[in-house]
Amino acid sequence: VQLVESGGGLVQPGGSLNLSCRASGFTFGTYVMAWYRQPPGKERELVASITSFGGSTKYADSVKGRFAISRDNAKNTVYLQMNSLKPEDSAVYYCNAVREWDNKFTYWGQGTQVTVSS
Image (cartoon, rainbow, N blue to C red):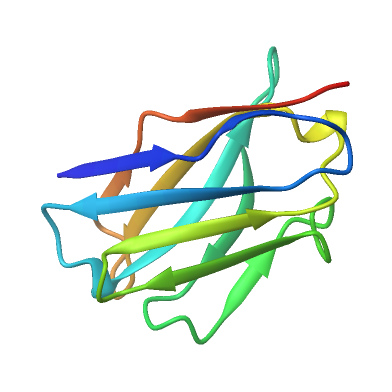
């Protein structure tokens, strides 16, 4: 099983980034996918999640209206479009997968660094 994130980097406040997470080794279309983040010295927090066929999404209050999660089951990939970035969005962003019907299996990616700074 692998979850490989990409798309992180350094961006100025107000800028945008699009994170990608490509999955392999499990049946992607049966998993809820999510993005978490962990700022330095803080706990990991849920940013956004999307159900297996994309019918439902959830967002942390801090990113509502600025971030959008989506998925392409044909490409085994989940995305996080991040707009109007703020310095407080700086963190390591992790991709997460949980089997939808029983929450029994959970997988994590290695993380990608996002830094918002002028």
